[in-house]
Image (cartoon, rainbow, N blue to C red; front, side):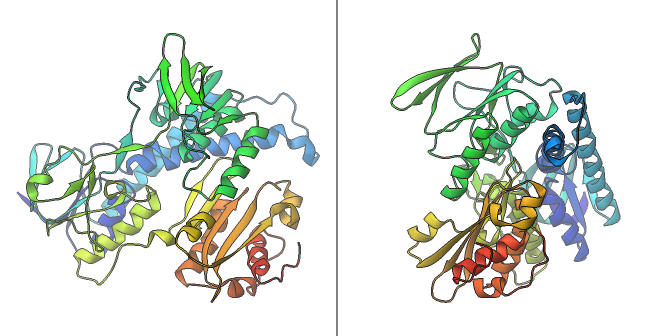
Length: 456
């Protein structure tokens, strides 16, 4: 039986990062992965979807190029080529993870794993001895009762990432990040698109002002958005979805139904409960150091719940590896983890929304600086959206920021650093930003909180 200091189950953005950090700390590490290294993020999520979104954005820009003094004649799109490119991008990144394992002396076992005991893991037909075991199995796509994906008419995001034929019409069931991203892609390439969301806004956990702005922008693109509209059932024969809206039922018909209603946790059938690991509603329970109720078993990422984000899992992977090595570390604060959505306009958010701050009883100040007042946004022709900043009133610490507009996911990094440093809006407002740039909107939003805005 091979001996390891750590066996990681799952090679996604949490598992592979944890394995590499553990190897850096001198541990002998093994990783079990039944799919390709990189997990859902690299192979069926973040990376291929962003490749497709990049193509969609480029196509949209070229269609609108005449507004910039450039004429594109005979413009067309090959949707199959878009998908094939995205698969090549995903494969390249997966090979990169494999290379990193070799570079760091990590042994990869390409098979599913079962925990036999607190210190034993079966991977395929082989048993491994481990001083510690890290669960990083993540989640998988799911359907709804009575609306189960079939890969043909009813699609999951995995199906959508692989199909090379653009549907003529699509109903997107779910207005979260995955739903709005695919809705934008399909519409950008010419499909008729309707988003159906059971909650009263798109991106239900996002600041309400941002959600309203996104709904307005998607509407301008020709996407129909239905909120407060729970699905009642889908008839595959007629390809008709029945939804409840405004106290009555309405039927929608489309060539494809994309189900984007969340993900299911992959914690069952691994033998965790027999080792004393407590699981609640499918999620593995951990402490502040990411240790489960079994002292030698740890868990990170989607499988422990909370924000289901690749970078959150990666941050937890580092913490878990360092905790196993005996360092005094704690899991990341969710209020300091950014979240991004890559449709157009893009969305990025960190910290508390205005509604959440009020629910917590925090006396706060709020500002909103529109991109219409920003030189770089006007020059680039991307004036949709705004930067909304929230600070607690007494000391001015920034407790939340919400950006909607082109470049938002890159801009939010400044606020991530600000949150880590517990920066105030005074400090951000007095920080010199290069001109002309989009992040100047962050500075202006900060200045607005102190009544010192220059360009508005």
